[in-house]
Length: 185
Image (cartoon, rainbow, N blue to C red; front, side):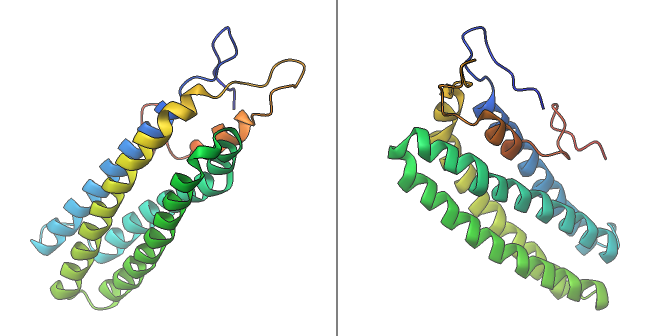
């Protein structure tokens, strides 16, 4: 991946890229919730397609959070020690989200074997809770981190700058998410 820089070597768009990924995840979650509603109305996807869509979303969200925990957050903590409490709070959110995703996967497995509308309503309720948590998490993360991400500088040619922009770029990018926010699917 080529790292976009300005003439002064400042990295561009890492904070903006984070926002773009969050927008895509919000859109996918909205679509998933609409698919559950369609299923409940009797006009939507079969449980197997609904489960596949949910698992794809859950996987993309998990990869995004893992990339942040293992790449972005350590890089930011190294450059902005004052952000460490924020980063720890965001990591705690990631653990809560992981638990919700596991619960969703279990509910969807039950829906596939026994397509009960009550089970689908439980899936919808879990998605609603996930949407509320993610919206709060994304807004907080964007307010706290975008400016710091956009201020990181690329390493100088002599290597004196300790930033690891490739780690940040790799962690923020997701191969399933194109520059325009689409999934290429």
